[in-house]
Image 1 (cartoon, rainbow, N blue to C red):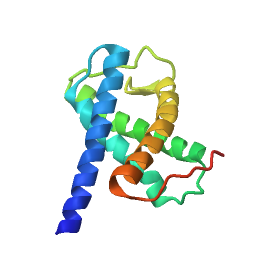
Image 2 (tube, rainbow, N blue to C red):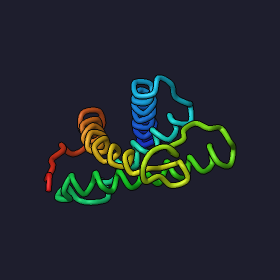
Image 3 (cartoon, one colour):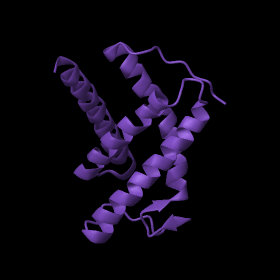
Image 4 (cartoon, helix red, strand yellow):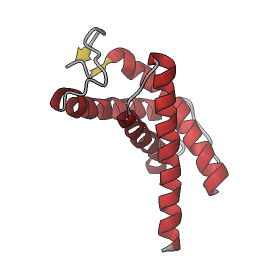
Length: 142
């Protein structure tokens, strides 16, 4: 039971870090956000943090970031389809951006997610190392 509570508290902490960061980035970029973006941010942060928990440390950071970008883009498409198309909440609309799909995802933001994934992966590894006594991060860039 103690081990399960520690695991739950770790992932709740990481979820909150991701939620706060995602909303903060949106506030800086757009000047507003929506609470659902906190949920998306928390899920995204945990997911990119798990990449090098599943793959070994020798997996190049460039590949991890590509996986992270694809995952976040997929999450945004699912969330956008539900929130914006089905529920009509109009949280975002990428229709005016190039190479978009249904106005929910687009290539420019997928590229941004690539670079933010690098930061997120490193931050997750640092937090796991410092706060949860997990393995010290080490990276292979390419």
